Image (cartoon, helix red, strand yellow):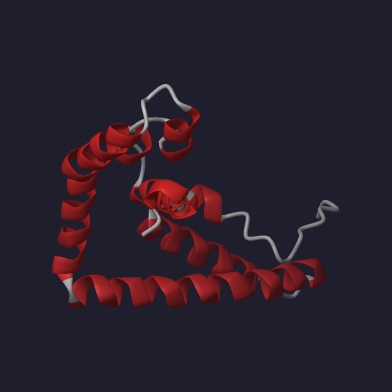
Length: 147
């Protein structure tokens, strides 16, 4: 076996498998099983011990996600509807309101909306939540919007 130092605290599967959790589930459990079968080798045993913790944690989260998903399918539809509403109606209204106070070419406007409406209309739901969180924080810090 090669001398590869695997940082045990790093789950190097996660970035590659986030795109498909069912596939990730299959891959992680297959790797876990293969490592378990090779535990007679001390190096494989050490890898298994470190990897099994990540696999167990992933499986627990995956089962919880599937339970929530199947027990309340309307929740996913609500997120999709809110995402659509944010990307069209809400961000448009907010942008117009901000432009009533600050011209689009001003620093104050660019502080609130650095990339105009784009972060709210494209990307993943998670990236839109980050953009919305940043907008709310900037509005809270802007003295014009204080009550």
